[in-house]
Length: 86
Image (cartoon, rainbow, N blue to C red; front, side):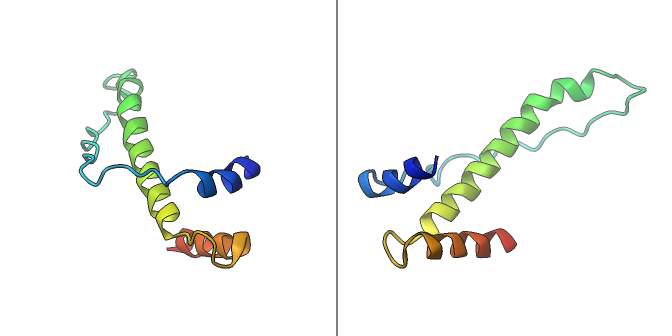
């Protein structure tokens, strides 16, 4: 994976989600286990989609912040670590 990620940025332009990509709809509040035990199971795909979009946007922000060739891999890892603290 490291080879792929080290090779790809030099050969391909960065791909980002469109800024017009809609935020996922808020998930409905889950019911208690006594009401309907399958309610949480039915809501799981919605939560997974919302988490995926959130992770994709965070990944795009991290990739956009990386310099293309300034300082090499060490500086890129340092910048990613700084963003993860935020």
